[in-house]
Image (spheres, rainbow, N blue to C red):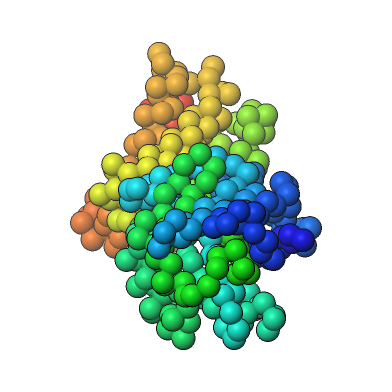
Length: 354
């Protein structure tokens, strides 16, 4: 009887039964990749439905070689661009083999599995899209106490919905493969992303939440109820306060993004910034009729650009205003007044009270 549990991906307990002389094949039902019933996939779109739904394990011996083939209920994909010839990158599998008495009851680091004494394993074949040298090095560093039982194929190749690897029979030990017991853990492959990937994710998340809050807290209907000059004053005051309060963070983020202009991170960063920027322009344009400029949209866009550039130069680039203190007011209220005056004047709007 096949039984599927889910441990980040899935644990398949298999009791071997031979189908042909030197091949064993195990089928597993489709749609049982939810562990005890309530496990769900990660939300990243690379994890498609069925990605970890093990449907078959096939073990074939040809001469002194043994091939292990894992099939899943989803087409294999390579979003993390693993080195050739892998051709897939999302999944990895641990095929535990009980070749005889004794063995290990402890699972490999990261699998969070403990085996029952009567289900102990003697060998485990790791089918990973990572280069074999990398997998062996990781095993040596993190699983030294299990190293005698770990077997890593020189290559693991994916095609269609199946990935497979071949090992030497002598590395598995003596015995008939059709008499052995097999247990399989399906798990997500660690793509070993760039060391800055986590920080990139955090930055993108901050900007996404910022854009969401902006659209939720200030709609065009709300902006229409606020006089244009008051709206501009509120915006400039909030930006000035925010830039000063978060100057260190903003400066670090700008430095981090510098030099990444050819990366997908930078493109997404730019897209999010422009989306928020364009939304602000749209909010100002609900007062289009008040703007005394032949091209109101261009005027608002350019005025906002000048405002942001001034704040970056005064607060982020010259954080103590040492270079500008002779000509720019250091007092926050006076600085806000001058920024507001220049913003409104560019739009052709007279500021009440001068």
